Amino acid sequence: MEQTFTQVEKIKQLWIIFTPILITQLAMFSMSFFDIMMTGKYAAHHLAGVAVGSSLWVPISTGIGGILLSITPIVSHFIGANQKKNVSFSVLQGVYTAIGLALLIILIGGFSINPILNAMNLEYDVRYVAKSYLVSISIGVIPLFIYNTLRSFIDALGKTKVSMFITLMTLPINLILNYLLIFGKLGFPEFGGIGAGIASAITYWIVTIIAIVFIHTQEPFTKFKVFHNLPRVSFKKWKEILQFGIPIGLSIFIETSIFSAVTLFMSKYGTIVIASHQAALNFTSFLYMIPLSISMALTILVSYETGAKRFKDAHSYSFLGITIGVSISFITGVLLIIFKNKIALLYSSEPEVIALTSRFLLFGAFFQLSDAIQAPIQGALRGYKDVRVTFIMAIISFWIIGLPLGFILANFTILEPFGYWVSLIIGLAIGALTLTARLLYVQKKQLIEQGQHNISV
Image (cartoon, rainbow, N blue to C red; front, side, top):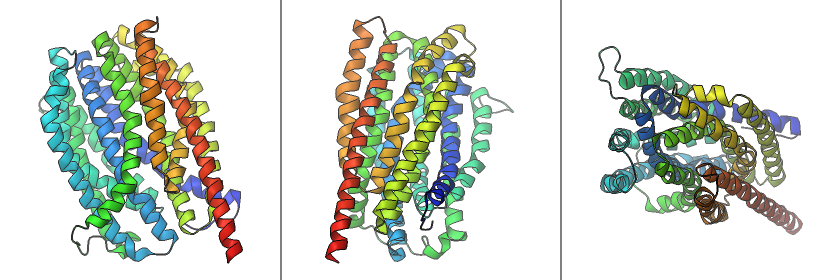
């Protein structure tokens, strides 16, 4: 990364950072995307089982991943402030933190998976697939969280193309493993949806090993000597990572878990509705990778500029990111409405599932605009290291307003399961408005402080 002076230079740098992140996110999400799509081609009850398992796993994995995202602004801030000697220690403590969090998640999951699934109104086959899928995924939890940390370090240096290259190397492996293990091809056992979990776990190990090799052998990573010495665990550094990362992780968990909670509430409507809901949610989540990637790019650039005390530049990047996000998401929303029937065909050949998925996708199109505003703003706020208020706003908009409203609409109006999707749209819109107000407040405050500092100097 380098300092920019004009809007054209900023757009170019933002695009250079954003594009590889988007490709990486699409490739990473494609693992889940193809898990759902390929399992849907296998059987509806396997699709429902993977949907339930994914609904429990995704909020946890993204929430913990959010905690480890704190490495990105920490490292970017050091780079912007020209304090490069602090980078290696922070990254390794992030790896230690990732391992500790992974072990904690595995332990908690071992005790809670049966009670949670047994409490749900699921058919036996669906419950069996969901549990087995989660157990399979757990094999790859430790490497996945380590990779999240290493990728945060790679991206913080502005080398987002490296993350893209690593992920693209492993995506074909995941697809091949899915094909072999879901459908039992070339002599492999036929696991159905469970095979998707096994394939993902193996892929997590592979992508982590590749990332370690890159960091240890390629410039500019080698100059930081990340793996040359292994320092002792520093609980002081853990505290810094967690104090900054936990609000980020909880905000992401709050947002993703609301979608999972909706899936669990929909279990009362039967296997076909669960399968259709999950298929539509899977595709809209795929589109969400666009504003999410802009968000991650803004975290890198805004933290870099604030580290260098260039607050006006940070403000410009925030505005550009939101503008680009809204423009792209408007286009994807229109395309989603036009091609909803063809998209539904990607997930199932069963007429009932196709029809319901198309209807859910129509509601999903309206997610795009709110996502395009709130996701980039969250990224900018993380760059400013302002994360606690975002967490509180997420709780209010999704859990205090969104989910209760969804329950009312689903149970006391003709909307039924679609009522939850209407409430999600409302929750996202409220989140976008409140986050906009917070970003404007933070930016105004920093510009005032910078002005006072310049006067005193």
